[in-house]
Length: 154
Image 1 (cartoon, rainbow, N blue to C red):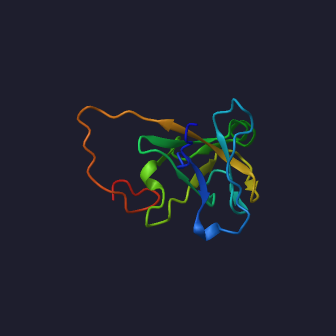
Image 2 (image 1 turned 90 degrees about the horizontal axis):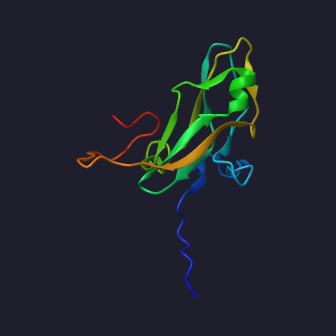
């Protein structure tokens, strides 16, 4: 009988600061959905025309040649005029368990509407899609991540 590999390949975990606070691990709503629905870890509000960094209480682990794409939910974009401030969120594999913030995934949303956007803990605010990436023949990355959000060049 073939032995099953029990090593984790990719998924989500709760960061230590939010353990025991009822954070839900993202899941796909249907068998053919690409995205994992990501919820807010706290209540909050984004004023009209402003942005906010929303904690999720989550971190993601994946293969060295993978990344987690973060997207605003299409329904939120259509109904509430929400957009990711940086257009596309990129969670690199080495963001997981980094020393600065343990790899805590934060969602940077901008409210482009005319009304405040209120959300509650547990509301789906984004979706994440795991993807593989390719590297160039002469690829030679230099450093090791030692920071959290926005730390790649530091």
